[in-house]
Amino acid sequence: MKPVAPFAYEGLERIFHERGRLSLCTCLIANPDGLSFTALQDACALTDGNLNRHLHALAETGVVTLERVRGNGRPTTMVRITEPGKARFLAYIDELEAVVRAVNASEDRDPASPGLRLATS
Image 1 (cartoon, rainbow, N blue to C red):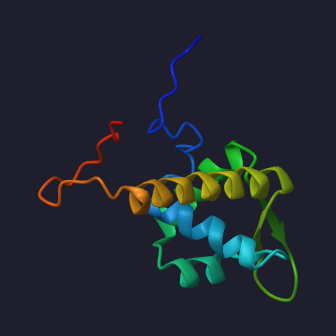
Image 2: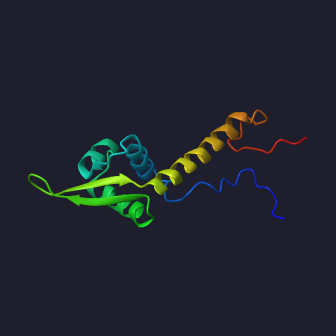
């Protein structure tokens, strides 16, 4: 039987564990109908290149969909979070909350040491 590792946080997925992707997924959950590339860029303060790189990484893993739509004028790229992507992201957020709870519950910390220690009984 594998020993319990209380600080392993295996639910933290690399695909989300980056500031830009965290911002994008949070923004898309707040806007379930999706947003245009430009609206996402403005909302998350990302450059064209960074936004494009992050969106392609998220699309490759099925977290978001990218759709070119034509209307009046120039084509627009619409971005939406997928249902599986939303579920994965929310599970990731739950795991982050577990990290915060562990830090807040750690009353047996040495104030001079930034690391967490396991409490001994």
